Length: 118
Image (cartoon, helix red, strand yellow):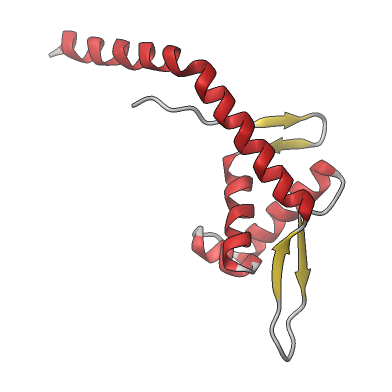
């Protein structure tokens, strides 16, 4: 089935899309940047770079981290980070609803072309 992947371009600073949002969701779930990165199959460095890039795009932190130590480190989303996820998911849902019929038509066209080729 055809699906929609959405990136929001925040000119001139960068873009926010499914990867960054999924990483934020993983940080919320896992409680750390490194664990979230591992869960998504990426290095800590890559996960940290994406968090840093997202912070720069919006000009405010999306994650609050605590350095390791006797009780270990960790990370949590800031209220703004939670808002970024919620707003991105709302835009994604609205966009999917708006293009549902067009995606179905494209998918039907793909199937029709496959049937004609057979």
